[in-house]
Image (tube, rainbow, N blue to C red; front, top):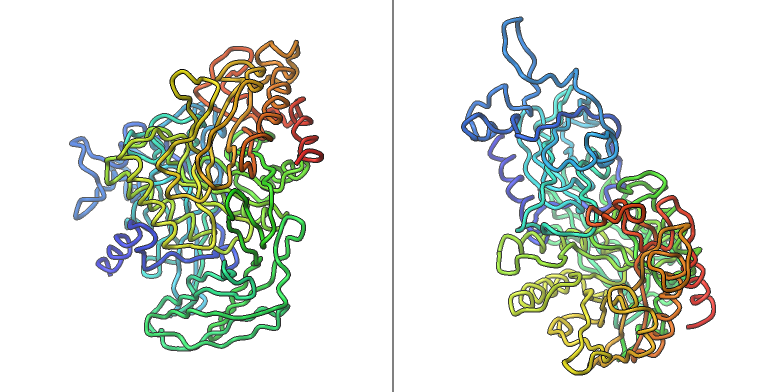
Length: 604
């Protein structure tokens, strides 16, 4: 039994494209939530993980009671035990730890979590899995004293099979560490808060011995009347039949499964109502295998480029967007719920957006689900941000695993049209090779969406007012996307009137970031930094400049809402917040909000 568990753990540590088990669409399955109150222990010296010789307790043949994952209890009054889970304080899951207790605000290190629960399987032969939506950053996971495995990466889901470890009463323990490391993804230096903890849903779900584990159902990019994809079973009895049913399209197809438990299919249908921002049509798709029925809401659309244009369902579209961080201003901390998603994306719709850039990491599933429902096109990205260790193979494998998990999780989302590989990374041969490999991985999984990355602009000597994009990365992506801050980091807003752009690529151009900071309620003339007037003027002048850029196809200004950042120290103005939001950290609209809203209503 222990050998089988170890094998599953080893598999789950691999990049997702090599995994034998990453079960999709968990929220549509029959789940048991483990959200709620968990016990916690702050452990900055990792006393519950290492002995005094700095040897991990979980590597010992007979782990000591001193390991917090053992959830031990004294057997008599003389036993020495230096932790007590039952009398430890409580913390809410999902949720970051930074703003649940004042002592946590700047804490980076290890925190132990424990949840006890009872569970009885519906049928003895069934299999049970545990799903974590995200844990930031490194999670060591234990059930009833047995180690399930380790996951690194703060924004992607991971799972373990726990069938043979479940008891009537169970103790689930995690050691979560959010220390920043140079070799990690993201690396040491970022411009967002390092929220630690179990930040998304924790769910148990039960399946038959053989079940539908994965599927992809999308339109053929070359033929909008052809629905293509695959369905994958997991289990031992793989030779069987399964059914794909889309009632509104009168599709009811029965397929034979191959020896690997997979079906690849193609279905022609001329009655498809295509998903778009104006018509966010979602079809109920049902997959049936024996007595299991798995449902999903899937929209059908094509996205491609033609020279400098982006074509949605064959029609040219301008991406009228905004960038968003995963934070709810009304509840300081990491956003994670359906209500959070409806708030943030509802603001984007009110602003006049048809598109959002979810920066700088994969956001939670509720954001993607809500974007599908609201009709918002989505750019998703991984935190390959600034100065990653390009020559470190482990760093690359980490980035690839996060990219793969993001694509696999959201590959059936009609809203998602762009996978982004990186943000503001300095060009070099090592960086180019790193991102080239990432692009190949992305295309090997999904060829129905566009690839991008937020690049940077520069000027040649003697021509400071001619801005250029010359980047080898453009060979690997479908869009020329770049960040620019003319009027904020580069001169005053009036400089925009002197700038011209030279972009030597026949591809659509996306301005993935521009903007300026402003403290809500701070007023002055348009040349006084940090005033609403300065920010509004920066937007007005940038928008006039951007309209003249060749092949311009969209923008996602920086950013919807002020967000927490430990880099921002200006007293009485920033106070630990990046102030480039169109909304304040209290959700109040600044003047620049109305400038952009008016532009989207009247100018494209």
